[in-house]
Length: 73
Image (cartoon, rainbow, N blue to C red):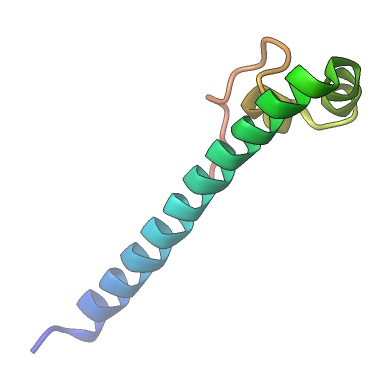
């Protein structure tokens, strides 16, 4: 039988990977939507990118910000 510490570790790992995959799906969806907006209404995309935080804007393909600065927890 697994120790309680191992059960907790497995639970946390599962939840982390679950959230990580959801984030990846959301980022892919955001990229698709932004590509569509860029084609249909480029000025709207620019307006959206100006009003979003740098980390989101880089996901959206705007600006030269890097996604490499994640906050340490």
